[in-house]
Structures are given as structure tokens and as C-alpha cells.
Length: 329
Image 1 (cartoon, rainbow, N blue to C red):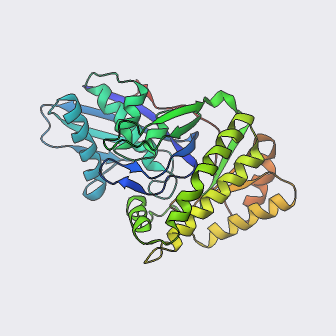
Image 2: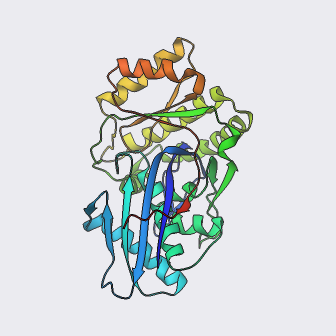
């Protein structure tokens, strides 16, 4: 009763921010992302009648507290769905910083979902995997799929129509690149889940954010279809800034940006003034992700290195969540 899964994190081009149902993780708006090959989580899950409780280890460190509770809660959901009672040992490894604004929860819960369900001997379809992964972390619903994916917000109370679908596979736009400039590897003080709740409840700009998302989705679908980096980059950048504005205007204010964040933003704007198609996006964290094409990579990397960004993770569209025969234990 053991299985291992690999999942890649995804970066939202049109963001998901705010829930209409906290427990089921049902979003107020749909979102579009790209799954990236450079940000990977590997998870092994084993169920046994000999285990007396769930155990969770991340990057070699046994976890307790909130992180372990979230994993155990997701395992309990899966046990209930598949009518099993055994406890589970889970071990995960990330090849990138966790809880630092690089969407680690998207790959974490996508990998956990596939590994644990497979360990129980079941083989669900991608739609069902997406629905289950969503209930661990909303963005995980999109990491089930490779390439470009859209998470449909749905309207049903029970969430049966809130799941991700693949818009295009990774082969659709092989020249597309994302450069993640690591500003800080420290764990963020305000988790995304808490930040969303506070934003929905207190930001006066939240209604304006929702009112403009549908147009952003429409532009982004067209930009991906046509492989239009200018339209995609500008739309994603503005969408990101609108989301950040809702956070900044909460009570109390949530500001994930650090000095390096602003430095990277200005460097990207300067590159565009020089005729380079570079655009930024950010999530709930200080890291800056630059969207561009392969032909502009070296020029952008040189500029960011000169600005003091020593750690840059380069990614292209990657695969969805898949099983592996290489167990972690």
C-alpha cells in the first residue's frame, strides 16, 4: 500500500484569490496557470494497519503543527471517500523553497493526492483527482495537468463543477519561459489561506478585482492560443498588481513585497523600455516571476544577475502529476 507521485508547481497567470466556500475551497473566480518543470515535489505515501497515526516528513524534517494537520486532514478526506481506515506515512521533497511564495502547496497537494489514492489501489480520472486535490489546496487542482490549465470556479454548492481542465499541453508553446527570481527563502508570515480570507472580508477593492477577472481570463486564453507573449505578459502583470492591491488595502494591510521585489519589478519595466519582452507576476510572497520567450532569456538573466539576484530558477511548461517507481522510503 505504497505509491509515489511527482508534481510540478504552477504559476497563476490569472490569479485565484478568495473563496466562496472555505471548507471545500471553492473560489470566487476562475484562474489560469502554467505548470512548470523546474519546481517539483516528490511524495511517497504508505498506508498500513500497523500505523497508529499519520506522519508527515518534508525535506527530511518530521513536521507537526499546522503543516501536519493539513496533510492529515487531506488524508482523512481521501480515507472517507475511498472507505479506508488505515493511517498513512507521508514523505515529501521539494527542489525549491517551501511556503515562500512559489506555489509549493500546488505541487504538494497534487502529489499527495495522486500518491495516497494510488497507494490505496485506486486509479481515478484527472477530473476527480483535480476535485480532490482542490480540497487540499486550490491551486493544486491545476497542477494535476501539464502545460496550461484553467480552474473553473463552478457554481454548484457542493463543488462538483469546480475543477481544472487542460487548455493546452506543454508542447503547445515550447518557447515560453518563466524565471523565478528568489528574493527571500524565508517562510512567509501570512499564509495564503489567511490572507485570502482577510482580503475578502476587509478590502474595499475586492469587488473591483472580481469585476475585472473575466476580461483577464478572456485575454489570457486568447494570448496562449495565439502564443502572444505581449498580450499574455501585460494581462498577467496587471492581474497580479490588481490582486496585490486588494492585499495592501486589507485591515491590517498585507504586504508581501520586500526591497528585492521592487528592485526586480523596476528591472523588468526597464527591460521593456529597452525593447525586451519581459513581464512580471507575483503571488502571496516576495518572489518575482518573469514571463518571457526563450530568445530573450540570456539578456533577462544577465540584467537580473547584475541587479543582485544570484538565485534564479528557470522553467518551461512542464508535465502534470504522474506516478513514479522511485520511492522516498
